[in-house]
Amino acid sequence: MTTVPDTAPGTANPLIAPTAEGHRRVLTGDRPTGPLHLGHYFGTLQNRVQLQLQDIELMIVIADYQVITDRDRADRVAEHAENLVLDYLAAGVDPDRATIFTHSAVPALNQLMLPFLSLISVAELSRNPTVKDEITHSRQAAVSGLMFTYPVHQAADLLFCKADLVPVGQDQLPHLEITRTIARRFNDRYTPLFPEPQALLSEAPLLLGIDAGKMSKSRGNAITLGADEDETARLLRGAVTDNDRHISYDPATRSGVSNLVLLIALCQGRDPHAVAEEIGSGGAARLKRTATEAVNEHLRPLRARRTELAADRALLREVLHSGNARANAIADRTLAEVRTAMGTF
Ligand code: TRP
Image (cartoon, rainbow, N blue to C red; front, side, top):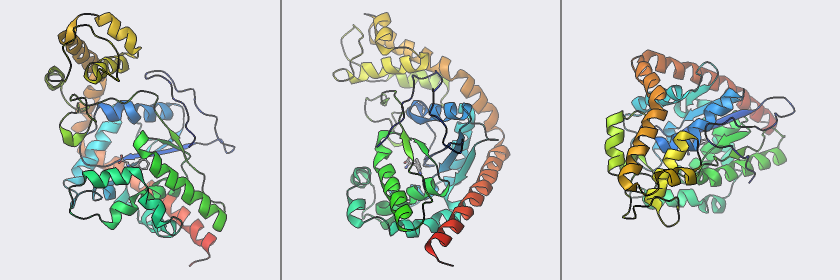
């Protein structure tokens, strides 16, 4: 797996030379199951905005068909999708240059999944550790065919638009490996059509939830981008710390304290050790106050834009409509190429 290094948060990403065609296209996505939180923001959202500032074409899939991988119904999916658009725009994604679209609105994308399924074995699908983990945490009584095969659908997300870069978290790497395998096999078996996309991993260490576990919408331990300043203060006051008054950055042995130090460092674009040293023996109370101020200050412009944009639901829907139209045009073109390559009608 090739990864392209990222720089510290808040600094420009010294990317990545353009391809021979002088063009790079990035695709990434989110499931519309709830609002985005600080983990998404520092993990991929900031990266997406930075890439766009460097004139790299940005595609974002709102993966509505992935919602029904680990649950029976997609509740309030249209509302969640609109709110994702809201979070993207508030974070600085430019809707005039980015293509934001939903799975369910792009039929040709789903049609590509079928030949792609023929290029990967059941054994290869069974080995995917991310799918295994999701099956363990699933609320469903039985594992559906979609749970098992959605990484191939995700391959279609990347291949229909021939994306060459994917800003994602570690957990998505097995899916990306499946995508690369499918691209390679298609190119070998038929005609070379697809680039093998590369992961763009954030260098920022993983931000945990306020309980020092994995930050997640469904675990109630996340600070969402849209949370107001009081809610942010309340959540951070309840964060897990320890009894040692001396604050240090030591993620392996002091996960709760170190996570708050990291949060401050990410918000302020600083080194976590320097942040810890500055707080010194101020204890957990000072650490939490500093974290609250850092988050609220860093997110203030984003949240102000978010409040303004939230009043214009028609605009959010329009961004999705035009994104879907663009994604359909690209997917139809790729499907036509695939048909020609395979010699079908
Ligand atoms: N699986 C991703 C998640 O759960 C969402 C996603 C769907 C995605 N299609 C993608 C990510 C393509 C990167 C590329 O968050």
